[in-house]
Structure formats: structure tokens, C-alpha cells
Amino acid sequence: MPPAVPPPAPSPPPFSPSAPPFDRWKPRRSRPGLALCGSAVALSVYVAVVVNFVAPVGVRFASERVNTCVVFFALLLPSIAFVLILWQCQGAIRTAGAILVALPALPSLVPAFFLLAAGDPVSYERLHDIRAGRFHIVVYRTNGGATTSYGICVRQELPLGHGLSLVRAIYGATRAEDATVEVLTPNVVRIVSDNSGNPEPKTVQLQPLLGF
Image: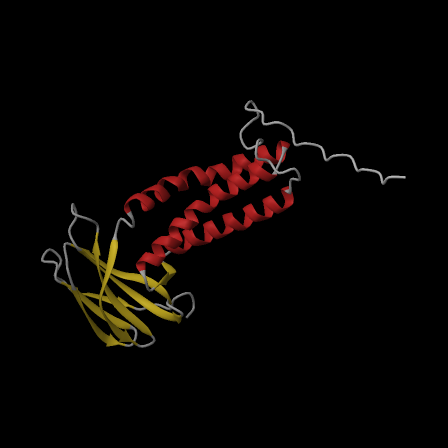
């Protein structure tokens, strides 16, 4: 007796141009739990990076280009979470999740587009630094493009290793190209810029950075 021939596998449903967006590429087995967890992680990283770069004290890489790349990819995370929810979730979970994730996703795409098109709007050129106790006082020249003048930004930095530092901006000046830093005590410095409109020195008390 000849062996039984197994029935042919069912063919996939034909492509329907009238299907809603993302339903055409929806996987046969959705994983809403995995999508929600992944979206939560992406949004948490997004919030952490944004808070880190807008807070008075934050972590920075030694390379400003790396800092710009970190911000750019962080701004894309809400959009990735949005697509993940639409792709893996269904019904009310997909609708509610998409609405919640769209709130940070849409505003974050605007600065991400400008970073991709024009790069960092303000570049930082490291000029020189001086040691004050445990900290490095670093002078940067800022450049906002052809329509703006040079500026000076002085940061209090605590190296963490592997190119990372805790930083806090302690001085800023426009229409200046350099500044001198004098260490008065291990916790007090005096800063003078070459800005003719603000030649007065500024004395700054160095503060611990996040308890360090």
C-alpha cells in the first residue's frame, strides 16, 4: 500500500490593497507583551537621555560628535516604540498604546530631522583646561554658524573613565573667543573672558556633581 501523501500547506492570504496600514505586514503571531515591554524600555531610555542633556549636571562623552549621535538616536526611540506597538498589538491595546507613544514621538521627530540635516546647531571646540582639586575646568569655544559670533562655555568636569565625564556649565559668554581660569582654592576659581562687553571676572564656587 503506497504511503499517504500529506496535504499541501495552506497558501497565505492574498495581498489586499484595502487592508489598513501595518495590518499588511502584521506577523501571524502577535506579541503584545513583548511589544509593550520593548516600548517601555525605549521610552525610558529616551526620557533618561533627554533629562541627562537638559539637566544642570549630566554625563557627556569627550567627543561632541558622539554626544550628538546619542541625542539623535534617543530622539528616534519614541517613533520606534510607536511602530512596534502598531506592528505587534491589536485592538484597544494598539489604539491606546499608539496614542500614548505618539505624544513624545511626533515632537521628537522635528529636532531629529534637523540634527540629521544640519548636525549639531552649536559646535564645541575644546581650548584648554586646568585642574582644580578633583575637577577639570575646561574652556570651550562655541560656534553656532556663520550668522552668529563665537562664544565661550566653561565646564566643571569630573572624569569617570572610558571617555565619560560628569559635567556642569559654570560660565558662559557671547562675543568671546577665549577665557582664562585662575584657581584660587581647590573649590573656587576665577574666570575672565576676552569679551569687551563683559570684562569683569567671575568667581565660581565649585559644587559636588551628583554627590561626587
